[in-house]
Length: 212
Image (cartoon, rainbow, N blue to C red; front, top):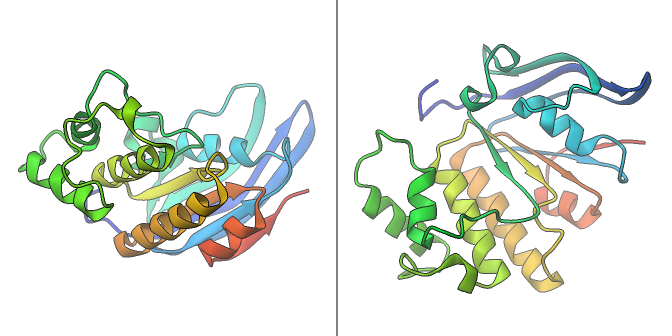
């Protein structure tokens, strides 16, 4: 799959169970630039679904069903080859790297003009001149922006969002929702958001599946 690869993410008859108890069933197609929201209370299997798609589901779960990106069978690939980008509740920036270093880490090895790409990425999210900053000196919102741009610079083919706004305050949450969803639409990436917040689903603007 090339960096310009753009295709729907298909979740075909996915079923996940734990100790014989079915947690969820999902059957959906996510178009490029669309965000599918899966909502449900804690323990309903939301994050488990992401783990199955990304390739790191714990062996205690029993799962079946297909995950396709265009004509590519993702379940036949190891996690690192699936082209899936992940955004979590915590930014998970590397504390031993500068802001610029964190962004360069996201770039593919063969990528050219890395400095220019990092500069442009920071300008895009209002952090121009932050290359040398220690990520621990950034506010929560600034760290979230860096994490988003690191993800986008890695050129994923689809994105999984695990309640990425839940630890932000209300005003910042609205700002980050607008930023994240606009960037995903602009990049033409199919995305799956799991959340328990109806405001997240409303901002995502796509179809919603409610669990439990």
